[in-house]
Structure formats: structure tokens, C-alpha cells
Length: 257
Image (cartoon, one colour):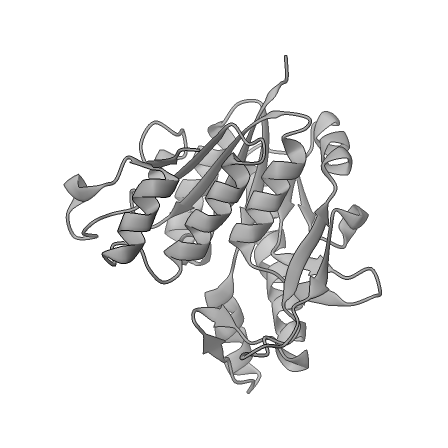
């Protein structure tokens, strides 16, 4: 029987506001057993780029990563945000290890080909090394993974954190009984964000089509749910979309194969 592991992906304002981050890390530290944290940090990157006089360009919610912006996101995601989280977890008694995809060769990717939009140095994942991660976890370490990958030829790539979480979960499913939780500011997928009682408690492929068609699901929630389905259909036991206050998995939206 496989050991259990909990993978938490956190982004948005939760990572970048001290109060919400403290709350999230308190709850993450309280999770027993094996665990992994994967984070974003886009707003901090945008703020840092502005300080450096570098324009931030977004298309459909995704960042255009030219050479200058690649330097910014590498500094911010792999440095400032990642190491701040690691230090905060160490203070909570969690032996955290900050990583990017380049560290220990855990996640390799390729530069996304230019189409109608050229996203620059954006990475699409080729391989996540579950065996390497499992070896680190077996030593009592808690990986904290920044949304950066590498192409094996010396180039860092900016990679969507939701995708990083799904690919990491799939890679670890061979070694563990995996629960993947996407947490953000809301209780889960909502029919009306202003009404807590409108939480959608489960989504199947069929109901997802309806939610897309009627506009309930849109924007950045689309790739999140697509990544969730990819995970649940590739060996991950459970995928939940919920708030930082509910990473125990009791509440939220469950993605059902």
C-alpha cells in the first residue's frame, strides 16, 4: 500500500500578502505526513519589473516572457518568493527545500512554439522526475517548487504553476497515493463569487462542458480545471480546488474522473 502525499498549489494574493501567506503556511505546516508546496508569484514579478522599468505584457492571463522578463521571474519566483516561503516554513518546523525545475533536473520543458501569440521563454513540461522527488521526500524534506523549468540546454523557462502542480502530482502518483489541492482566494469553483452557497462541490467532464458553455467557468479557472482533469485521469487519487482556509480537503470543489 502506497504512502499518502499532499500536494498544495498556491498562488494569487495568498502568496503575496503576508497575512494570507502566514495563514496558509500555518495550515500547510499542520498537514501530517509527506507533502509538497508549489507556488506562483506573478504579482510580485509584475511589481519588480515595474521597479526595473520593464513592461509586463499579458495575453489571455498568461505572461509574455521576453529575455528581460525571464530574468525578473527567475529572480522573483526562484529567489525572493521561494526562499521567503522556505524560511517561513523552517520557522514552523518544516524542513523545506526550495527548488526550481532545474534543481536535481526535476522538471524539464521545451520553449513553447510561437503561434498567434509568441509567449517568449514560456515552458511546456516534457518530464517531471517523480523518482528524484520521492527520494528527496524520503529523506524527510518538503519540496517547495517555484514555477520555473529548464530545457536541458542551459535555459530557464517560465512555466504555469497550475501545470507544474499537475505534472508533479502525476509523476509522484507512481510512488504515492496523491491528493492535489489547488488553493486560491475563493472556497472553490463558484456559480456566483459573491454567494458562498453557490459553491460547486464536484465537477465531471460532462458538467464541465455545461459550465464552460454557460460562462460559469472562464478565464484563469479554465487551465486550472484542465490541469486538474489531466491529473485525476493520470493516477492522482484526488484533486480539490478550494481556499487557503480549507486545505484539509473537507470543503471545496472536487474534480471527478
